[in-house]
Image 1 (spheres, rainbow, N blue to C red):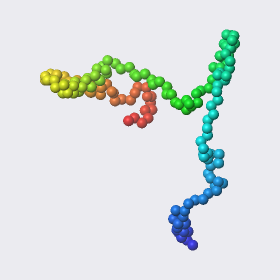
Image 2 (image 1 turned 90 degrees about the vertical axis):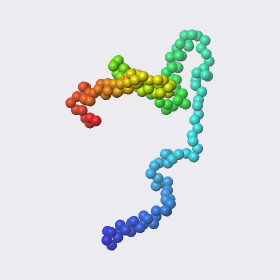
Image 3 (image 1 turned 135 degrees about the vertical axis):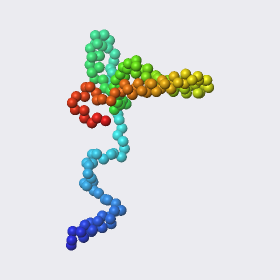
Amino acid sequence: MTPQSDEDEVWRQIVASFNDTAVRDSADQPWPDSENLPSEPPRRVVKQSDEDERPPAEDPSDADSDTDTDTDTKQADPDDEGHYVPPPPPPLPKTDTTTKIAWLALFGGPAYLLLSAALNWQLQGWMLFTAVAAFIGGFVALVVRMGDGPPNDSGWDDGAVI
């Protein structure tokens, strides 16, 4: 037999057994039996804390000595298990007055035009010019202040500069 005929025979066997169901022993499983899921989900048993069963202390000095040990042995609420609370976000960076005025002009000019159109205000020529000039001026001011060079603290290796 030639190598090509062996390969053709293997492909014929693969195609012939394509729809066959696989029967495997538990010994052929790729993972241990301990990893198989049980038929019923496990039930949780929640025990009462020791604080509810303990009688109240009569002597105030005894109460102080017990509180130190109780705070160390308290456990987390089981319902809160795995709940992620993200840290607070960092504060927003401070902007200078010029940038604030540029943003106000960028959004204020079109907002004024939309408001005057919605309320049917009569616009004089200089009001229309001021609104459009504010929009264009705010855009230009923000683009000019954006800068196009690498940051000053990047060092000699800029990496991939986009």
